Length: 336
Image 1: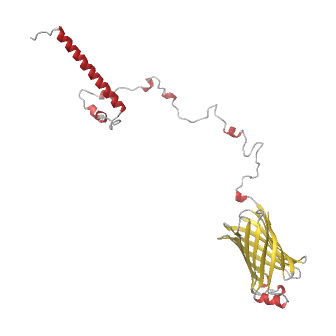
Image 2: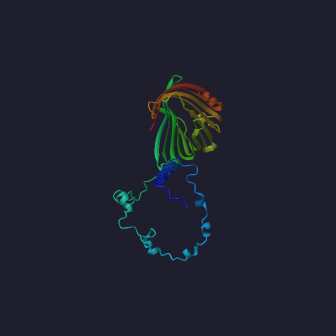
Image 3: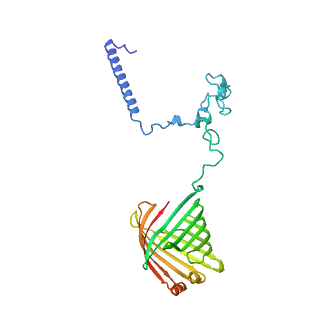
């Protein structure tokens, strides 16, 4: 049997034990703080115990989970759980729901002080009817010692797809209409920038017999911004004709525009009363320089050459006229 330690030895042992315990607690506190401030690469990953399948818990001896499944579950008895109040949304609107008509203050499309009535006012852009008048040339011309006035105008009314078109072109000399061509056409759009035209043409003039034709043609904007017109005509007594014209606008500046223009006429048979031969009858080449004060109004100056060909030239010379003529022109182009 060991002898009991004296009082001094006991005090030394107690002091050493307290020192060791304080050091252990301090080390444990530092380790926990470091782990919280600097999580390791495995932070957030489940531990081996957490990742273990739940089925392994059933293998623990002395644990009979079959008793848990036999325990009755009365959810209605659980406090704070009132499943009777959990109803699906639907049915009648609540009494304080807002009237859908209140968003427009009660105004509707077909009733009320701002009703549009029975007439349909909401129309697409291509359903509206428009009208326009374009005076391409209204000019004074001087050539071979004589002066004359020439005009070339076009007006139309209708929609983007169908419209009524009126074309008028002629020369006035000494207050009398020497030659005039007027066409009344129905235009129908067949492609972007292209219309077909079907209608009637009438030729008139002082001292000239009148001629009437059925007309069919196309008019539009070709690639590279060439404006083209091609119209075929069929008249009485087996007369046929073809008229082609083209023009181009070369923008020297935004307002200064140079416009070349070419026109040619063909006839299927001779018409001596009008000094017209068969084949290529006449052609006109012009060059005009205009300045647009606005897009709707532009004065211009230019030069134009008219030439007769073939049988038409022979008939004109036989009547004392000239095959060709060069004219200086000045006029105005406008539209509204």
